[in-house]
Length: 100
Image 1 (cartoon, rainbow, N blue to C red):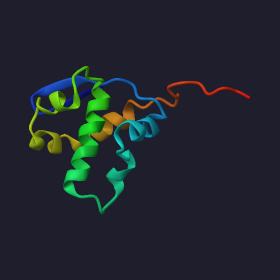
Image 2: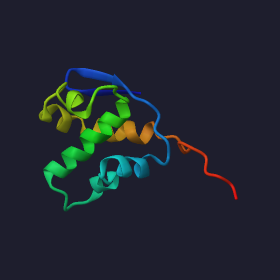
Image 3: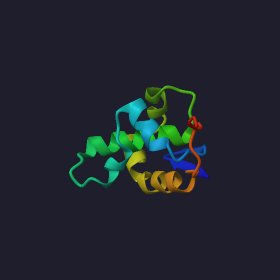
């Protein structure tokens, strides 16, 4: 699936079912916060920026990635970002746990 943000189009990667947990451990951001009505605009922006970054699998830093479009572009792409997340999430997890 492709993710369009502003003038840029990115090919998305498949995310695994344990992505929200790994995402929280790596960024400190709770992806499910997008459903929280009490989140500020900045908090929601941070969630969607980090989610778009993860979806693209960019080799750039988050800061470099965020310079490729304007904040307005990202806000206009929120529905597309969420749709990409829902469509590209696999039921598998990133690594197998040990069986005891």
